[in-house]
Image (cartoon, rainbow, N blue to C red):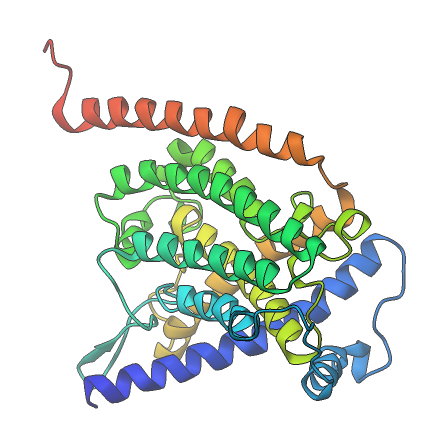
Length: 348
């Protein structure tokens, strides 16, 4: 199989998997939130309401998309696409399973393994900020503009904390390749809770909190505060363009959960019986990855159903005066500790 054909097949499978996952995630969130809040939730379209997401998607696809007369047409149309593309591209560098060997050829369950994978992820998340900011500005309305300004300030602030939280991971793994970071974690405790992550607990907590802010999820959903700014940056969008923003948000939730699992919780690592059939040895790592990722997705939903929205000045203060200083302090601690580990005490 040629390299081009293999890459094309991986891209198609990855995009199809991510789109189907988002449909399932939307349904699962509505069911979980309804259960947590003692409500019914979707129960009409299909068994247990599982076809409700498909029905809503079809409705959005055929619904008329209205453009305000004061909108900047080109940017207004391109902004939803610009929000969706980075969400799709981030998933391409996440390994969802262990490499498999077929007829002497090793195939990785990862579309592309970049040696600067972490930098690529941060770059793609930065591009998403432009899409939201431009969507609000191009709408020609004050409420979307206010939502986009909030979004830019919030996402840039917490993106700084997120990037700083990844520095100890790079120091410990010695690489910015996501596949290599997963490989380094395979070891003690049956690869399920790798020992190295004990030193990265603060980074894990900071990264997860920043992930909530990056995806505009409760309690950091000031970008879409309905009670204050109607609906935020996408107030003037309807039909398919609004659905693209909706898809991008849920893709980012799954991506953040998958990245957290990959960087801090061992990725696809887990106990695999040595004498098990080959197909079992191939599938178990994928199952471990999905179970861990969906557990974190449930945590996102749980927080949404439980916590109230923060006040905006509290949100910004928490990012700049709490998360970023703690991240910087932990980088110093990790750098000193790893220096002692690798080179010994300077006085010895």
